[in-house]
View 1 (cartoon, protein in one colour):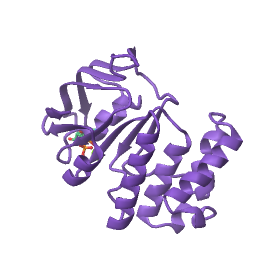
View 2 (cartoon, helix red, strand yellow; view 1 turned 180 degrees about the horizontal axis):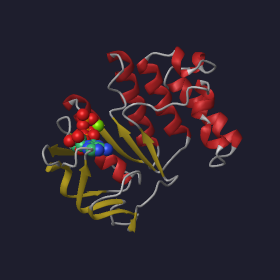
View 3 (cartoon, protein in one colour; view 1 turned 30 degrees about the vertical axis):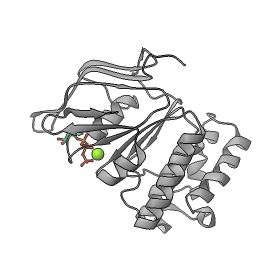
Length: 224
Ligand SMILES: Nc1ncnc2c1ncn2[C@@H]1O[C@H](COP(=O)(O)OP(=O)(O)OP(=O)(O)O)[C@@H](O)[C@H]1O
Ligand SMILES: [Mg+2]
């Protein structure tokens, strides 16, 4: 195992220009190292740049200044090594639950057999096996969110970026999925970056806790 961090943000600043021409600094001079195989939770108030940070690491946004590195290489576009669970699940409405979670096979990014087997396993884990032929509009918000989680897991990425994945779930489902996610992490060699507003959730899950401050977003504490 190498000692270099798997993900490294070096003096990263991200500015957005709004439609009215105002410049918003979402992240200011953020430096953060995430080790291979770690479970990192990102905690911070609304608007402090958590989703922005995940999107930068996922290659979905371009930084304004600094470096965002995966294994020492600049991240500039999405890669199949990184899977993302979005804050809102962004499912394809014309595909069933099962078709949504096996989309990687249709895009040629995963073998069909492998994808179907993983779909069986993870749909069972998130409690949606009985809903696999339903369409997103026939599901509740929390169920849709679980489809988004399953889609990312089926892909079996090395890095899992999860943006408040359990926020819309009832307490029992949330507890169950926290335990399952931790089990999955302990059984494998995945690196997980998990955004949450919940301090108990952050403490339960993480072996590394990063606290962000707002306006502009910066790292206030990094507890290991
Ligand atoms: N596409 C965009 N255009 C303009 N401003 C943006 C854009 N995306 C994010 N921002 C701004 O960047 C800041 C950080 O947003 P971000 O979504 O990263 O926050 P967050 O920490 O994920 O908040 P929440 O906990 O509410 O999800 C906010 O001030 C937001 O208004
Ligand atoms: Mg967010």
